[in-house]
Length: 307
Image (tube, rainbow, N blue to C red; front, side, top):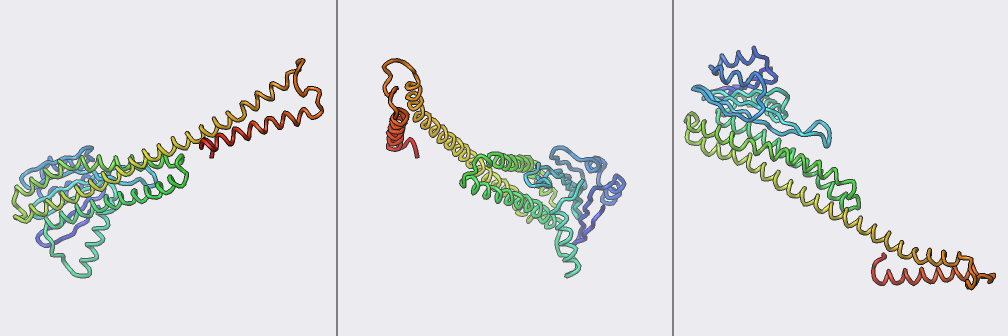
């Protein structure tokens, strides 16, 4: 599918799941070299920057949330080819921020006519929408982390272990994807600046694009640090809870151990055993056991080993 949006002095062409014929058609229209054309035909597994006399290619991968809650994270590839008066983007699946940008530009064109933007402005808008989407995804995951934190301190620390690990894994995936973009994006913008096609103001625009990526990366890093702290806190709560359970079980065992010893002692049928001929022997032994139990319970409560 080919989408075109004309602006002042140029055009943005967006190729969604393009065929080889569509790629060759666009490459011929904008005089894109065969080398750059080949990079558009198939997905590229790693970030890439390439350039020829007419255009510069940038391949980036943006993190995206899985279809289901707590689903696996994925990467969506976006290929940019930028010339003096055109921007070509190629993608192999639907990418929400670019789709929304297309709809926004179409609506603006219907309402106000042709946009008065230029190629460098459009490029900044494209990156702004892409990084805004990553920021929104990050904030969505952070909101899940807030709910997990509430559950954790409400006594559900055993069930939040997996949830915290899942959130931390998602933050790690986003952080790695943004880190892989840093060097290629910087090199791509430097190549465009060196061409001098967009004037002196492009240097400031390039800094804003880099700042967008940096701000999102810092946001992800901050939330990941929070998730890591919560995981450690959760582990401490689980360990404390287990220690409390073990202490209670040990205390109860200490209470019943002497009671068992008393009962075993009075079960011995030997000569000289006290109360053996008494009709109230059962109640006497039971009273002794109850007295010992009460003394031990009072002792443990005083030492704060129980309750």
